[in-house]
Image (cartoon, rainbow, N blue to C red; front, side):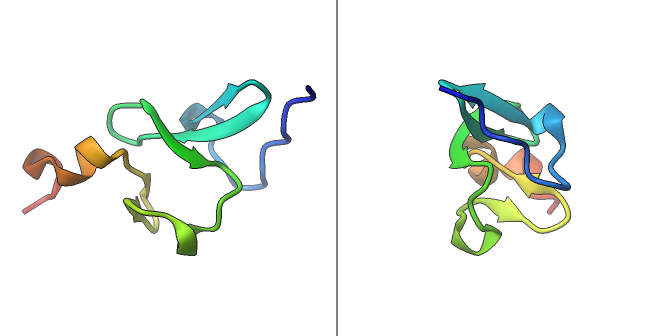
Length: 67
């Protein structure tokens, strides 16, 4: 399988290929989020514009809410 090309503007430090498919990593813990890199931000859960993709655990962690 040929690896997917990295979409323009995507930071390669927050992407991991799995079997040729690119997945976003959490901007906090860098674990795989299960979100495909080419998924529209309008269809994502746990995404913050200007910051990036969070995993569910970091999204709900009060330490990362900035409150």
